[in-house]
Image 1 (cartoon, rainbow, N blue to C red):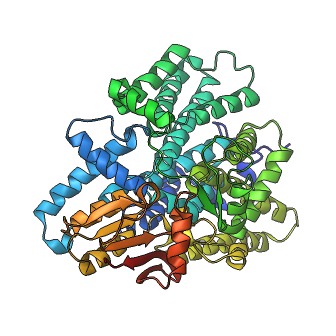
Image 2: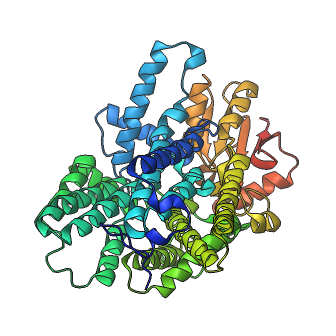
Image 3: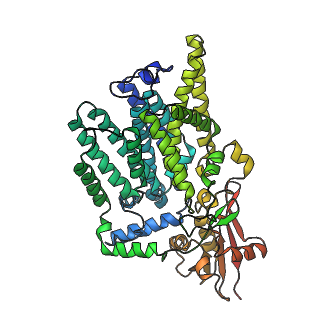
Length: 544
C-alpha cells in the first residue's frame, strides 16, 4: 500500500514514486526552491503597505504603542503583547530611519506598523514547507509553499496589523518542532525532548500572539487520534509545559499586571463595546452572544470559500481531502481531516465571524491542494502514457494552477481583499459581501484629508471610527476640529458645521436609521472609491 508519510529515512511509496523531480531534489535545491517561495510571498505581502490608512483595530495598536512607550502595558489588553512588541520595534526603527533621511525616502507610519505582519506572513511560507515536508514529503512541501506564497486571500490578511498572522506562524512552528521530535523519538526518545520542549515554547508564543488555546487543544486531539499509544515517544510534561509557560510570560508579561486584569474584566463585561452588528450580504446580524441562530449565518465561511478561493485551488484541495478520507490511519491525513473539519466547524458555530479568523484554514487548504496535486500526478501516471507525455501532463497541470494563482495576486494588487473567483464575480461586486473585511477602513484617511481642507473652524466630524479620524485630524494639523462617534453620540445639535463619514462596513443596529436618513437626504458631498467600489461617503451638514 502506498503511503503519503515521509518519515526519516524517506518513506518509499509516496515520495519516491512521484512523477516530477520535486521529491528527489537535494538539500541545496530544496533550499533554493524554499527561498524563492519566501521571496515571492514577501514581494506581495510587503508591497505598498500604506495603500490603506489605519483601520479601527490598527489605530488601537498605534495607541497601545504610545502607551507602552509611556510605561503602560495594560493598553489594548484584550489582545496579548507579542505582536504589539514587534510593531513597537518596527515603529521605533522606522522613526529612526525617517529622522535620518529626507522626506522623499521616509517610510509611512502605516507601513511601519504592518511590516511585522507582512514579514511573519512571508515566514509562514517556510513553516508550511517544513510541516508539509514532514507529513507528506518534499514534493507536496514545495507545492504547498508556492500555493501559500501566491494565496491572494492569505496575502490580504497578512498585510493587516492583526494577530491572526502571528498566531498561525507560531502554531505551524510548534507543529513542525513536535513532528521533528516525533521522528527523532522513534529511534531515541531522549533525543526528541529538546524538540518537544521547543514545540511547547512555540505554543506559548502562539498564545502570546492571540488568546486562542483552541489550536493547542486541536493539535492535542490530532495526536490522540493519530497515535493513541506513543509509549516513551512523547514530551516530558514538565519541560513541555514549562517551556510553554516561560515563552508565554516572556512575550506577554503584561498578563502579570493587575491593571491588565481590571481591563480584561471590563472587556468581558462589554464595557469596551461601542456598536452592535455585522453587515453580511447587505443584512445586519447580531454579534453580542457567542452562539446564536440570529448571529452571522453558519454558512458564512462556506460562502467565503465558494466565492473567494480560486476554483483550481478548490479542486486541488478537494482532491487532497478525498485522499485524506481514503487514508484513515496515516498521520498526515489525520492532521488534514481534523484541522479542516474542526477549524471550519468551530468558527462557523460562533455568532461573531470575521474573514481573518480562518487564516489557518487557508493554510490547511493550501497543504491539501498540494497533496491533491501529487495525487493527481499519480492518477496521470496510471494512464500509462509515455514518460515524456506523463511529465508534460503533470507539468502542465502544475503550471496551470500556479499561473491562475499568480494572476489572481497580480489582478488584485493592492486591494487583495477584493479578490473573487468566477463564482464570486457573478454573485456580487467587490466589497458587497463582506464590507467590513474587504474595505477594512480604506478611504477614511483620504476622507479626513478632504474634510480638513474644506471644513471651517470648529467643525465636527462624526464617524464610527472616531479614533482613526482623530489620528488623521491631528496629522492634518486641524486641532480645532471636533470628533464624535456616530453610534454612541449621534449627530451634534446645530449650529455646528458637521461632516459625517459613512462606511458600509460600519453600518450597525445603532446607526442604521441615521445612515438611511443621510443617504435619503441627497447625494453625498464626496465619495471615496476603492477601484469601482464606494468605500466611504462624506455628507456635509452646514451650520445654521
